[in-house]
Amino acid sequence: MAFNVKWNCKNAPLRVLSFLVAVVVVEVFIGLTATDYFKAVLVRGVQYSNKVKLKSRYQLSSTLVNQTQTRFGAWVWTTDDLVKDFNEMLAQDTDAPNDYFPYPCGNKAYACTQSCPQSLSPDPTQRLVDILVSPNLTLSQPQLDAILSMTKSIPESDIVILSATSSNHYDEMQAMFENLHSVVYPVTKYFSVVLFDIGLTPEQRRMTEEKCACHVITFPFELFPDHVKDAHCFSWKPLIVRATIEKARHLLVYQDASIRWTDYFQVFLRRIDRIGLQLTRSSTNNRIPVNTLPQMFAYMGEAPCAFSQFPELHASNAGYRRDALIIRAILEPWARCALEASCMCPVESSLVIDCVKLVAEHRCHRFDQSALGIIGAKLFGDEFYRVMLPDMDAYLDINRDQVMPDYFRSIR
Image (cartoon, rainbow, N blue to C red; front, side, top):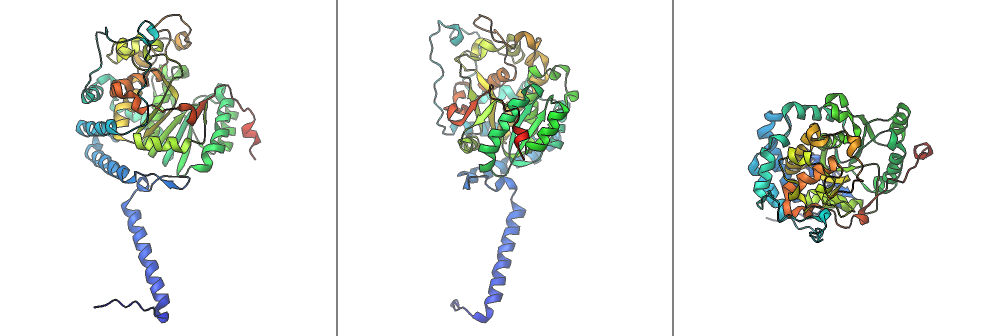
């Protein structure tokens, strides 16, 4: 037998038509058998290099969702699967330096832990299980339902950039959008920006909706405990992060109004994709207990001295991959703490928001920032450095002094 390779001009139209039909059939098949998640997110036209790994991970998560969907009506996973994912995450190669501040024990702001009566387990599986089984770090059915009710207003995208603002940060928020519009929007595809209104005036809200090229959503304070209504307790932040990741097919980036991105934003996305979680360390040399009230440690069943080895985080920026481990072991414990006044906001916020006391520990409270640091340290232990963003200044600037009160009005 032989293939006839001669081109018959009379049959050319038929051959072209047959080829086009075959292409359409293949495209339809791909469209029916793959989700948008499998379509590699593009940044400046470059595909993520590990899309095969992402597909495999998503298939695993989808199976777990189907098996346990009736429990919460959302995502819940078995402990064995989370342990497997956690071990894979710890084996992931990162370029983050292991350079926890090597200061002498004499300076209590950098206290050592040798004499601490309670320490974190050296076994990563045990640390993960401790978080998963803790009733104080697990959302109840009604709590999760209240959080997920916010998703009805959130658009679904491969990448979601999330922020929130109130009237006193309106001008700072305009500067944030000037940065997003000029640096991020032109080079990022398949994304949406979601802004939660936690206290804008009606005119500010109208102008923002008209000019931001984003989705503005009112935060439903009425659904949550009274302390959440105090915006300075920052309980709203873990709640909107947990809700919004439900609509992020791939990655979620949270940023406060103070964040200004450099041209490395697309590199930041790739780091989240590869590592699963990206947090930023505080520019100070403080450890977690220095600016965290003891009540938060007590709520989580931990001794403050066990966390003296860990640096304080910035909570103004973070990146999360839509991943079973990240949601169940980081975001849901963080959200549960946010819903409990005894954890997130144990005293009047105005009494502890300013870190001016001349004491070595518990001089103030960092609210969501402290809670995220404790949970992250509980989970990662000595390998917490793996999820820290190295050389933060190359990626972003935290600029709370930059305001642009007329930016929205300047947009035509």
